[in-house]
Image (cartoon, rainbow, N blue to C red; front, side, top):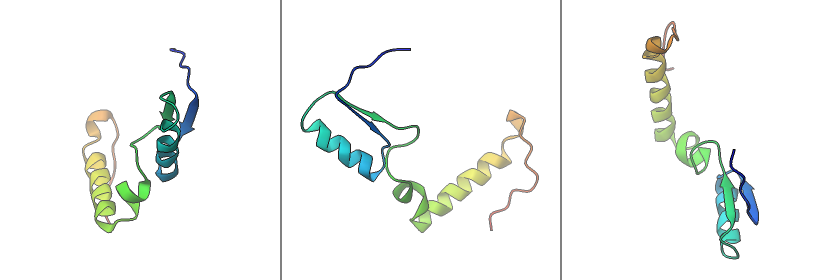
Length: 80
């Protein structure tokens, strides 16, 4: 594991985390933004916009339908 030294560590790259990052970066270059997934809010990228919600559902159905090669055997994949 690599040790990192930073002045500010921000956990989460949602709306508040990205705003905190910009505010901290105005004062120091040693800012660390920690995020386990894609940057941005769930609402903007998946959940609150109907078109993006439909795309996310289609992606999940496609992944489940084609998961046999990974040893995952989904029964019926249906979007309701």
